[in-house]
Image 1 (cartoon, rainbow, N blue to C red):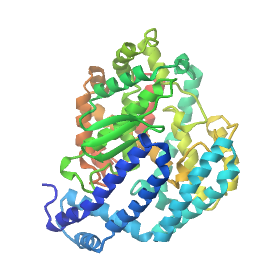
Image 2: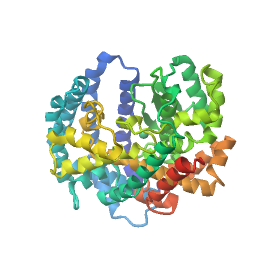
Image 3: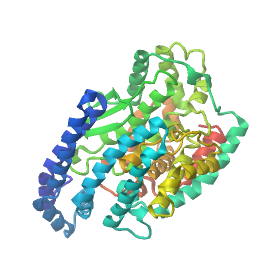
Image 4: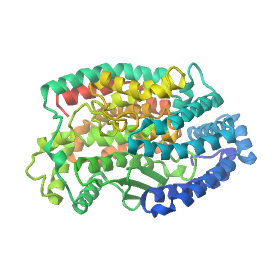
Length: 500
Ligand code: MG
């Protein structure tokens, strides 16, 4: 039994209604992104807004809050019990610190901002989005004030997405990886082994055969179809409704087929984390991945570290050749190059492993300064373009390719971008441990022994759910705190030595 203490057991009982409501809302969210008729959007938004308020009320019930308070003073709790109290206490304290008027205002502004962002992006006119973004920055600053922080208000926002993450942590990561990534990029561009373009990018495909490819890729990785689904949505995502019901999506753009496959492999990584949580944690606040950064490390591990390796391409090629007629004339090395195109580009979501972190770095630096009031929203487009040019040598010709490309700010998500890079860095760190403990990660991949890799991740990371705070989980799983040198070493091996 993971929960033995009677107070903790009572908390689990009292929490269940919150879990149940979140379960239902999760299903509504999944449906909104996949099968809901488009015209249903208004009623769905109304229903979800009402239910989120209800969920908050249920969480802040006196009987639950006072039990959590009581449990905080208990000694001798096991790790799961202590974790459960930590997670609930954190959730309750965040919700208590933010006044309802602020939460309401935030939700109202971001709803309007999303529409404004869409329109601004369509018309390539930053002025349409500007007043909303100004309001969002102001609200984010207020959020930081309500939550409290040390040293810098941005720290409070980082902490919302990644418990315990601070500017000093991310500065250390970026200071370690950005200069080295630049060197690797220069060398890669000079050598030309990893191409900047590939003719396969232009080849059109039919959706039917590609769906069969994706299904077979998931079979290969060991996707449990009795507990998981694959559907289609405009933006690929993963949602866990429970440990035995996890759903991923991909999209079919009809061209440049690596995108749909690698979305699937990426989301598989997210899904596997949720699927491999210890079932004893079912229907508790611990039954979910612990943070955005740790979650992204799992998706990046499968997508990049495994999926874009030569050892994996060996398995992918026969699947492609079986369902698609146009891949047969390309050998494994040529397919490997196609999925590992390296080019300095303007768009984050299209960025490769070498250039990706420049994109989050730019946003991270701008966000810090925005929140500190050191720069103005008005100056963003220009600052963005200058910074892009300085980092990657490319300059947006439109706002669509620059400051208006991401949806995140319109959702009010400030402090989120750095967790993508934290994920990349952690994935490389996990790879080093996997290599050691599995007797060679790529040997296992080459053998098609994905079961051992899944098991390794289950034991090291997945089974705990949110039991340990992210920093502690990383130390427990890898034997040390976040160490960006593993990422640098990975880039070296893959893109300079070409040995992966
Ligand atoms: Mg992801």
